[in-house]
Amino acid sequence: CFGSTSRMDVIELPIVWRAAVAAKDFSVGEEILRESPLMLLPKIRKDTPVFDKLDEIARRNQISEPVLYPVVYWSKSSDEVKSKVMEFFVAPVPEGSVQHKRYFSACAEIHAMEEFSHIPAKEIMDFLLILRVNAHMVGDGTKTSALFYMGSKVTHSCEPNCM
Image (cartoon, rainbow, N blue to C red; front, side, top):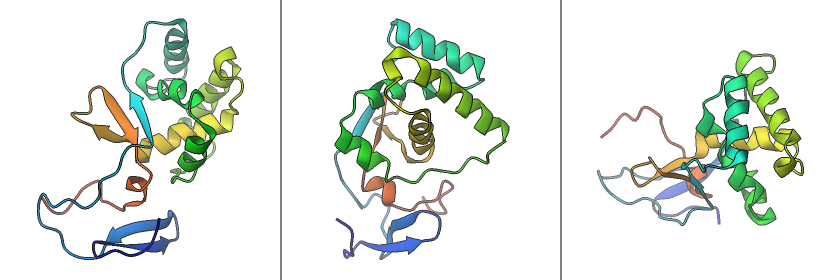
């Protein structure tokens, strides 16, 4: 549900559409939002041929291997979860850039795998790009990250000006 609370307001911004912004100053350690994850993304590499193939694709396209692992969990997600995730902000990658070529090629290769052939390459690419700016660490961040529906809407600074 979007709207105003005493802590946050929802505004429309040109690039990200709707976003939650602070409606007041917060004290250090004050809880702003609590929600269950929409999707958990374990960072553990399983010793299976699928992960071996994702590693090969990542190496061939000069992408960090763990970046591709979430596709395994995306392929098993419900349509409801996928629909909500596709509402998240997708950071644009300039077409023709080296990064775009790498991701585009890797996603085409992933789509060509039997396990992922039911997922369009563009959807795979959008999902991976969504993760770049919307995935949050869970715990110490070494084993799991997650996507949060409301949390994805909260504006923030990657270089906060407060502690």
